[in-house]
Length: 274
Image 1 (spheres, one colour):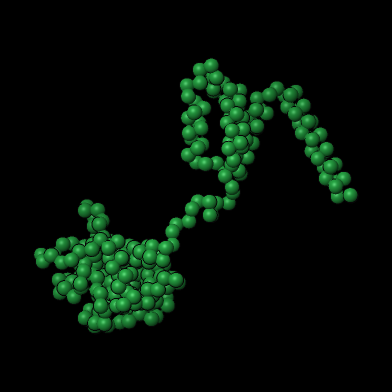
Image 2 (image 1 turned 45 degrees about the vertical axis):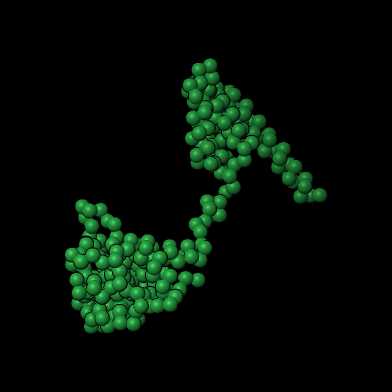
């Protein structure tokens, strides 16, 4: 189980309480629970509670302090989010590097992830309290992220890093798919049926095929049809063939189907009585 008990998110001088609630929600989505607020302009707030939705418990346990020094005083690793380069170069991390460092060190040290004001971020003095800066590589045309969005990006990277350490890999498609894949024999019967129907509607000329069936094979091979999808496609083709027949032939087919259904039902009834 992922344990982020030594990791805290620190928000400095947040101006809008809705952003605090949204941050709490982002944290809980990713499994982080410790929130520290440095001089929030409006907190506690019903607006924050409304935006937090089911993460109100994070707001209720949030620590409110007067200075950033107080917020990170017991932390062995402090990483501050910075949207721009500073005059004095500081060790800079990507979100992935930030996550790897935080996850590896949080076993031994308390870790603080510090985010600044919505309009101006962290000032130089606050950034100098950080061991590293992390910069989210947003588009240069508009690099300013919403506070909760920035927190979500970093917390998501932390969760990914923690899952990788625990050896948790993404589920394969077959683990959650609701139908088994069609077999090779079923697929070949489908291609035969498809070609027959395409010929019947004068779309495909077997004398001048123009690689049509090869391309159809390539198309359906890419999506790997399951059994249910195969039955649907075969049903569509059968319906096309049925509607191409003359009315009198359709009646014959319908009568044959009814006889088949009747015979099958008689077999079932006889089995019940035995």
